[in-house]
Image 1: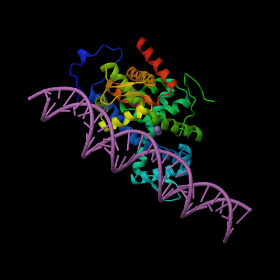
Image 2: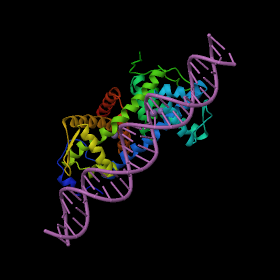
Image 3: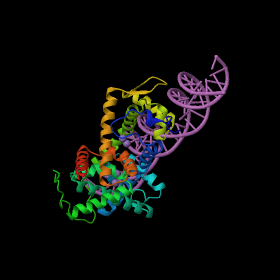
Amino acid sequence: MTDSNPNASLTAPSIPGDALPPVEQHAQQYATVRNAHETELIEDYVELIGDLLAHRGEARAADIANRMAVSQATVSKMIRRLNELELVTSKPYRSLFLTEAGQKMAETSRARHDIVLHFLRALGVRDATARIDAEGMEHHVSDETLSIMQRFTEQQQKN
Amino acid sequence: MTDSNPNASLTAPSIPGDALPPVEQHAQQYATVRNAHETELIEDYVELIGDLLAHRGEARAADIANRMAVSQATVSKMIRRLNELELVTSKPYRSLFLTEAGQKMAETSRARHDIVLHFLRALGVRDATARIDAEGMEHHVSDETLSIMQRFTEQQQKN
DNA sequence: CAAACAGTTTAGCCTTGGCTAACAATATTG
DNA sequence: CAATATTGTTAGCCAAGGCTAAACTGTTTG
Ligand SMILES: [Mn+2]
Ligand SMILES: [Mn+2]
Ligand SMILES: [Mn+2]
Ligand SMILES: [Mn+2]
């Protein structure tokens, strides 16, 4: 269950670099990542649908397939899932729309995404790189880190 | 093509929300994330095996299962994959070892992980949070961003 | 208005990464 | 040294997220 060596500190050879974290803490790291992976694709879809609605007035399956570089079949299947989760409504062959819950998720995800993106730019990362990195990082940034990023970006802009 | 402006002043036109990126660029964002997801679990395993070898002298399947909070069956299956990829060698009921390729991957992953972790701490994120965030973020940080993070951390430590 | 085209859905396949249950091998200890 | 405890493997299940091919629906146009 726990580490099988209670006297690790006595027997461990001294190693440059950090020690291993306690088992429970270490396990928490990986569990949090697994958790994020369950929701991140959903968030990306909902966020993209919200963006398409905001900027284009409609969100069609084909647009999503193009933007994500994924087959239409894949998008269609995912839309069924989003429907079951009551995040979108869809009449066949019509634009998608977000439910209340969907809109809330889109806003939250968009806000988070923007904070990470603006932070990376404020750090000095080139725009194209920042966009790529933000797309992945956004799902793994805690609220604590997020607010620190936001503060940093604001500070940077004052100077 | 891209604005490589290190002192990012106002390159972005102010917004009713940023415009959508061009389709190809947008697609590249998602594709890069999908790509990272294919390798990140492998990297975490190899990195952890390297750490266990360095700090404990051996890396047993049971330790990995505990540290990752995952079943022994899951670890066993994964070890078969790592074997097929020629990243580890394993005799049944003995400690795992890393091949040359495995050691190289472990070093690279560990270095990247450390840069992200130290950066987050330098930013002011609490240690426990930084560790959790770094575990996920590390797989989505480009080389460009990574070297900026490293520079930032060094600067911070001088002050 | 029929044909062609574009968009959408469905069916069926695959890999990854989880799980539990049962079994096998090794290590510990009474 | 036999019994028990720990560790590792295998089998079989599942959900997610990809894919291609084929069918279906709606729109455009000759
Ligand atoms: Mn996003
Ligand atoms: Mn994303
Ligand atoms: Mn790592
Ligand atoms: Mn990781």
